[in-house]
Structures are given as C-alpha cells and as structure tokens.
Amino acid sequence: MELPDKMYYSISEIAEYTGIEPHVLRYWESEFPTLKPKRSRSGTRTYQKKDIEEITAIRRLLHEQGYKIEGARKMRRREISELRNEETILVDKTTAASDNNQLKQKLAEILKLVQELGADDSVKDK
Image (cartoon, rainbow, N blue to C red; front, side):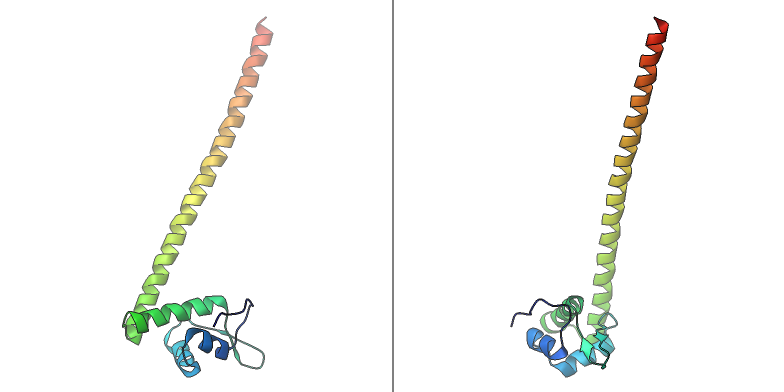
C-alpha cells in the first residue's frame, strides 16, 4: 500500500502501510518516548509522516536487526542523538560559512573606503 499525501493518518492506515497491528503500535507508544502521535478532539490517534518514520525505524530495529524492546529503545536514543550531533555540526559549519561571508563583505567595504580615502589624498596632494 502506498500512503496518500496528506498531513494526518489514522492508526488503521498506518497499520496497513507498515504491516504493524494497531495494538502493537499502541504498545510501542508506551515503550518508545519518541513515538507520540497527536490526538484529535475525539481522542483518536493522528499520525504524521515523522511518526511513520519513527515506526519504520523501530520496526527495523525489532524485526530486521533482532533487538528486544529495551535494546531498540537505547538504539533509537543513540541514533537520534547522533542525528542531532550531525545537525549541530552542519549548523555550525553553515554559521561559520555565513560568518566568513559577512567578514569578507565587511573587509571589502573597508578596502573600498581606504581606496577612496587614498584617492582623495592624492587629489589633495596635487
């Protein structure tokens, strides 16, 4: 099954898409703090794409890599921590590049002012 492109999905849609029974999805919510679907006004679970990605990651750890719940929980924490570290490094590099560009612009402005001042002095000397 291919998921339709929309913002929210029901638990039955997610169960059909992932092959994970609804009662297992509800159990995983209690075991994995990273899996927290929103609730509608009527109290039904509404899953978003980020929830589907989390379910897929949990399923991979449990079903494909053979982890038990506790091990999968620890691995998800580690994976998320590593992703955050990579994002931080990327942000730091982007910020550094931006700072370098701003510095280059300021230096270019200063150089232009110095050249203009130098040109004014040469006119005065004549």
